[in-house]
Image (cartoon, rainbow, N blue to C red; front, side, top):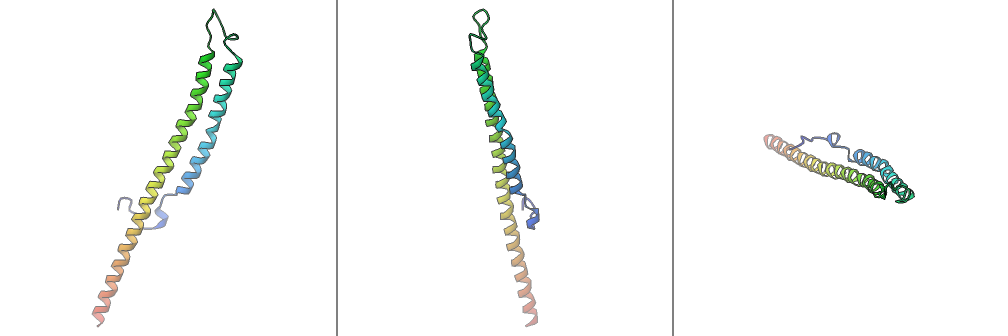
Amino acid sequence: MAYGITSEAQLIDVGTITAGCNQYKQALEDFETNGNRVKEAGEVCNAKALSIDSSTIQWTINDLGEEIKNVKTSLSAAADGVVAEATRVYNEQVAELNEYRRRLAEEQARQQQASQNRGS
């Protein structure tokens, strides 16, 4: 028994964890939106508008916009990992609880059988 689970009240709440991660991922949408806005700014502030002595920072702005969008992808993947791990732990806990109940039922059946044998 890795978790010591003996009742359903001890199981982790996968539903709450999943809901929280989904809310977190929804908030991450701002990274994509703002990354796109930064890229749009790079297009508006094109090479001609941002040129100084034939040098431009337009591509740097576009790269920054893409990096902002990539942050969303990384953080979203982390949230998915949390949900996957919570689900794995929950499944292990349920299996442990079922095994505990099975052993408890076996023990009760043995005790009942022993009691009946003494009464015979």
